[in-house]
Image (cartoon, rainbow, N blue to C red; front, side, top):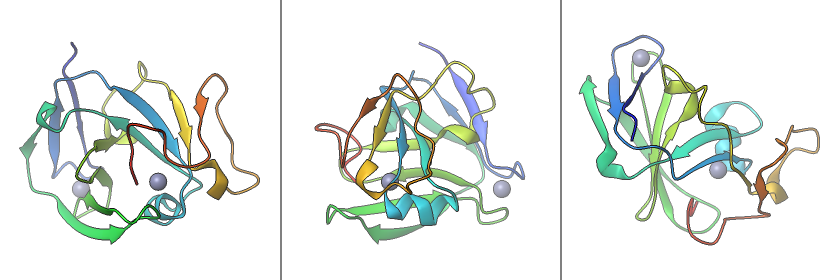
Length: 138
Ligand SMILES: [Zn+2]
Ligand SMILES: [Zn+2]
């Protein structure tokens, strides 16, 4: 078990994560495209209890995802960096918010049915047209 640290761009929000990710996704759903401003979101799936915010407080908003579930997305209100997303089943953190994400390459690519035709998809990941069976129920 590794404790990783992370935070937003401006440094007003910091967190610790005490668990290795259960999965690391590239999600190409329309919602993630809007939320990231790019062709996908890169998320690490971790147990919600593994994350402790050590500085600051996130802001958030809730949206209804393609599945009909409500997804809450949390970000820094000062610099706007996306940090966390959650629904009733799954908690994820943005891989780019980690101080060192070198050890956690993507393992799954999801919502490929919504991907832009030019979006890059990593090799050697499990691919799903929509949600994978167990996690990332967006
Ligand atoms: Zn910030
Ligand atoms: Zn998504």
